Length: 171
Image (cartoon, rainbow, N blue to C red; front, top):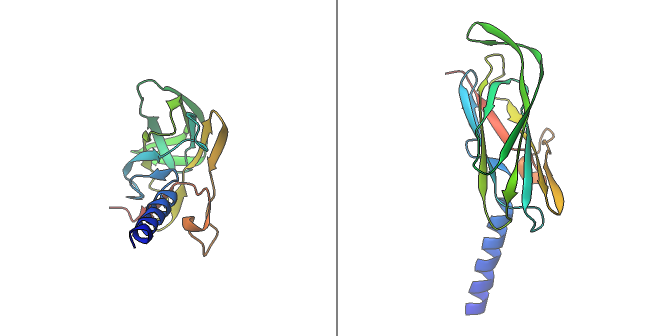
């Protein structure tokens, strides 16, 4: 009886840890036209090895992006043209940060968060979803959190879903 209860509890813990083993956003919804602090949660390395770099592709429509420094990590940004110009408090922004990478060391047995801040442009569509494509480079391997669900499917249908942000109507 005890062994069965222990086995069931172990299965529950394993299932819960597997389900939450993806890179995710701490806050997965925000209003169009608002400032948004994206906190990307990295729960583990790649197949037991240390994470050395986390790269994030900034979704179109997230503008005026700034990464948060992390002690012991180096930040690099890639700037580029947006698909169109966005209104930023009366100024047209047509370029900005499109990718961020943090380089450092995160052993597999630890969890960490990587933060960036930006504005969700007024031109974005409420009730749609933005995806932050993340590539996690490790000592032994790479995890690509880049799968975007097809219509009728959810992130749970994929092994490596991209962190998703649901856009709410403008406040």
